[in-house]
Image 1: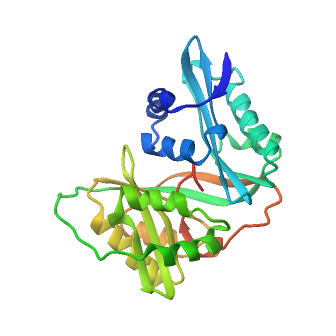
Image 2: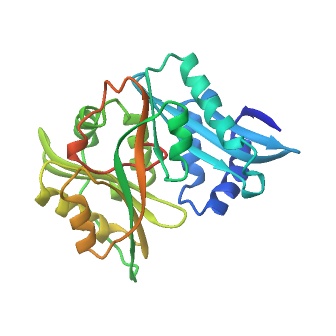
Image 3: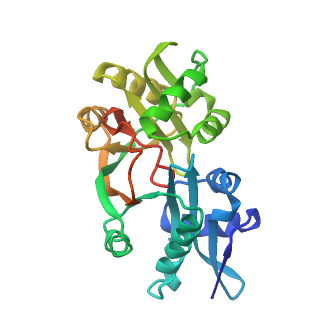
Length: 277
């Protein structure tokens, strides 16, 4: 068994693991990690085959995210997941990143706690199944620079490169509500391998939150939609339930180190995703 840096040539093997796990990520999501920092993405290789992955992304040297921790079911129970996670932690420690974050499943949470991660709050995956008739939809363009400035305050660090990549891939999912100088809310989305994914979804009040959700669902052409809602936000779960979403699973937002840049989670209805924060 060998741990090594991931390259773009490993993406097909990583997608195989992702498909086995039933995750919604695409090859573009792997490329986002690699383009952000190719030194922070890792694979476990056995007999010339990739059997595990982990990836990191650093936000403005304020904190980092650990995601894409996957192990082939045939190789679980051998400590691979722990080794991949520890390799990611070692890398981030070598860069002196003061805080690391991740979203833990109930099964993974005990491992993260042993490695010094603390719970911050809960995130819930919700899913909408519907019959969506394909049709042409249009929307007005959004001046994204105003959104990016506000997002740095709310997220806790600059992630403009990541958000711009979402807009480039799915421009119709970049939404904003309010005046240019006083944005009341905004949202982004991705076209995943299984479903369209709403997030981040940010709003200063419930009416704006509802407007953004309605617009996203109007623009989405898929029968399946995912959203990862913050339980600390009072509007998120009631709004998605009213639109027919069903609860799927909980996640625990965890951090290791000094959580100095926590942002404004009270304004966040849904995160970008467990892999990116």
